Length: 147
Image (cartoon, rainbow, N blue to C red; front, side):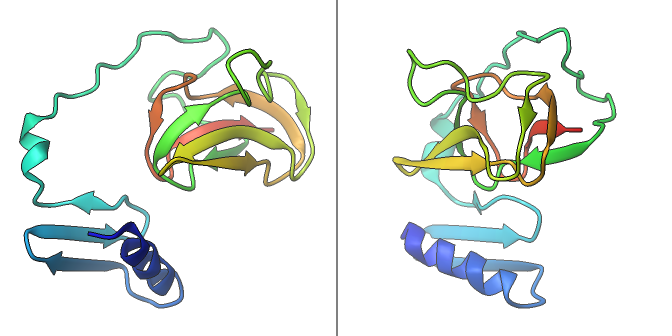
């Protein structure tokens, strides 16, 4: 299914009261739920895929799963790959404790070969970075907390 069609469906859902939609096109099928992710329902390649092993890396200042997130949570606006810096040789955009202003770049999410700069939605200090560099992220997955 063409990604442009999926993006158009998402835009249409955002402008309406629809909370879920499912579209079938031949053997391809997509279900979009408000607050969820776009999930292909029938993809023969899915049965061949192996789950991604979770990394055990954890920064001491970071909350573990199950800890309540304090402050403003910045979520991933799309599915993609999280990058903490502009290039492998560049320093990270932000670190825990850094002061940020609204509009400052926090990270990059690569999606569909496009580099999307994720900006701070409010001013404050970075309380936690919840994602490891170069790891895949899901839609609305918490990335940072800003206090």
